[in-house]
Length: 359
Image (cartoon, rainbow, N blue to C red; front, side):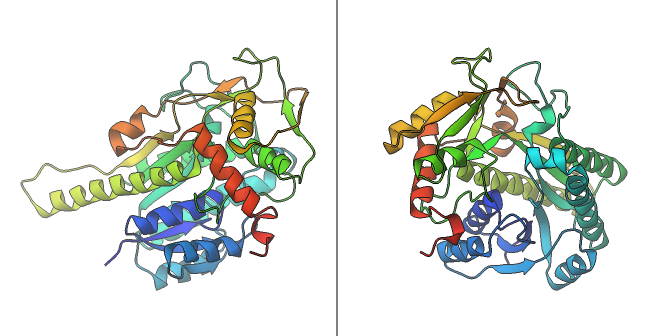
């Protein structure tokens, strides 16, 4: 029997790609999503790509009663938790909404998991929790601090997970801190489909390329970087999806060892995973202009851009060490910036209106 995974936020950008990777790895999946920043069409297309229907429940993670019904109806091995609001600017103007959804929603999910004795969780965190790093590349022991409510909500959940791990040794909690996901599935059938004007760089570039937006605004060109623009660790979303599978495989391996040791009185007792933070990134930085120029080279599309003032809270450079992921999970990013640009353009050109396109 397949190990069944509840994927909260599974209709979203990273969640939908991870569903495909989970299916290919032999896991059963149930998607739970309120569709507030995602599309039912994404699930339809994932179903098409994997060749079978997906068990989908439309629901909010703050709805404890519905979550209980879902857990009663399925025997889950664990949960991959993507569900959450993620726009930094919106979080500044609507902090209560972000804390209510991202923090209270996670607490509700954890309470229901605890009630049903399901204690295996992979949490979608963010490199945002590192704030403005003092040393690069950032590793998992780097200090954590945040400059906006979105990041604070991720960090608050991390603290909650740490406390849970201390209070109950049966919890296995892997916290994946990833950097800047970009790209799309190589089929061009699923990708990033932001509501209204994009918050992230790559969809902004691709919407300029497809003619939906006039030009790209680059925030700041006087940073102490290779060309004055901000440097980030961009990671292909399909690499990121494979990182979640690798984390789940690792967790499964560790829990199997726990079971083995508990069944043999003379065996060395294995402790639970507890709270385990792991970076997912490429380990190197790419500047905004380098990304724009690579996109133009790979697609043949000239991207009009203008420099404007820095945004408050933006930092010059942010990229992480992925050594822990390679050592523990056997995972490393395989796809290049050129791959990210080509796959993004395939998705955008095939779906100029995102999931609203009639194709």
